[in-house]
Structures are given as C-alpha cells and as structure tokens.
View 1: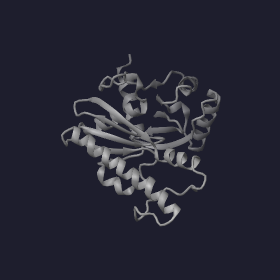
View 2: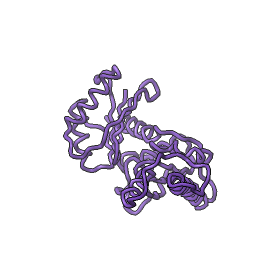
View 3: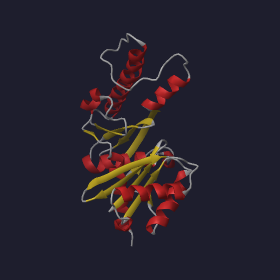
View 4: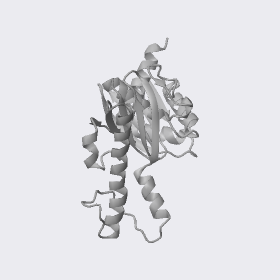
Length: 258
C-alpha cells in the first residue's frame, strides 16, 4: 500500500494506492499553524473510517507547496510510519530534467503532474491544473519540463471579485448559456467561467503553436470538471493525475534505494 500526500494552498489530499488503483482519497484543510498531531489525528481517523491498517503502508510520498507545512507533514509521516517519506522536488525524479531558470522554484505538484503526463504518454504535453492557481506545465516527449504558466484559479478570481465589489453577490460556478449577461448572476458567470474557458483554450493553443502543433493537453485539479465545454481540448481529465505522479516518483525512488 502506498500513501501519497498532496499539500496545496487550500487542502491537503491523502490518497491510498492499492490493487493498482486509488481506493481511498480524502482531504483536510491545509492549516500551517497546526502541529503534526493535528494531521496525524485526521489521518488516523480517515484510516479508521475506511477500515484500513496503518501497518499496511509500505511507501509514503509527500508533495507540499506550503513551506511551513512541509516539515510538519514530514515529521507526522515519519512518526506514524517509522521512516521518512519521499519528499518530491525538482531533483527527486531523475527521469525528467527541469529546464527553467531556477528549478527549485517549481512547485512539487507541478513536477508530479509532468511526471504523470510523461510516463503515461511520452509525448509533448501540457497539464492544466485547475486549483487555487490555474497552472499550465509543459513537458517534452524527451523528458524535459520546459516551463510553467500561472494565473489565478477560478475560486481565487471569484473571491477577489466579491471582496472588492460591495454590490456583487457570490454566485454558483455554473456555465451560462450566453456570454451576454442578462442579470448580475448571469453576468458574473459569463465573465468568469466563459472568460476562463477562453483563457485555457487560448493558452493551450499558444503552447501547441510554440511546439509546432505537436502537443497533447491533460486536465487535473479539483475544478477540472466545471468547464465541460473544454473537455474536448484534453486527452484526459483526471482529478487524480497529481497523485499518479506522486505514486510514480515514490515507487521509482524506493526502487533505487538500497
């Protein structure tokens, strides 16, 4: 059994891999001020509710883009499972070269996305991750992370709009039928959701053009299913893609360990 931990700015996701599939995925809030005991209690509770045994976990792998939480989660996993986790970074997977100016600036979740896309397809690929930030990570067919583009995520944009405009209400994230809003709710949905649809489609088109048209696109992240009209752009829409990358890295690193 493998336990993958993906700590983002909003949530920390725990994934259990066994029998060649993710059998359990659960999440808790990423709270930087909490102690290792807080996360340990959450994890123990999830294992109990899922009728899983902690002793069956053989590999643990950690990705964290919240620096204050990285040592907290590393300590928690080490204490709970008896050995430190594989901590993902630009150097943790030698199968991919990170060709950006400052490799250690790239998020470990984006490294995991690139690893998953490269391992599955062995083609030029861009992974669009719909999270707190909207990210586009491009990996080449010969195993190089070429670079990243970052924009505010959907919910981040919505919160920014509502917090700075007193008269605008919060609205559900649902695609409207028209780009021409007839009421406030419709107008916000058109501007944000159809605007993001155009942003994603435009960025994928630009990246493909820069790679001479030879590039597939994949989508992941908690909000990847919201804009259904984009799904034709992607060869795969997989909310577990980051976890897949973490699993691949964890297994490869452990295979090389003495």
